[in-house]
Length: 83
Image (tube, rainbow, N blue to C red; front, top):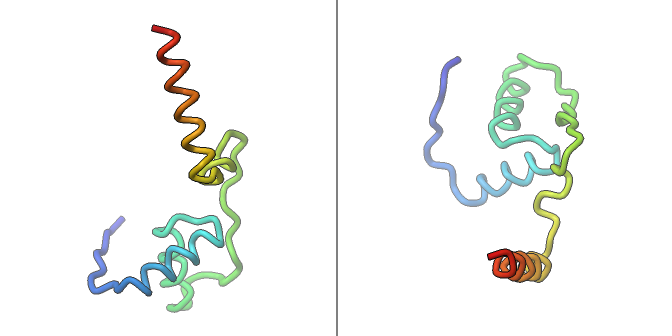
């Protein structure tokens, strides 16, 4: 497979790509490849479903900053008690 580098991506385009990928549950790379294929008529435009996993992926990024900080404090306390 070939690789491409795209230069000159401004902040608003980057944000739109990132948001589009997130809404569809795809990596930015997969999302951009889909956009290019669709624009060139090389692929069906039906939205792809992300791969389904049965682990903790659904929890990634759902904590608030306060919840994260509380978790870190509790984890640090457990590590101190274990030593």
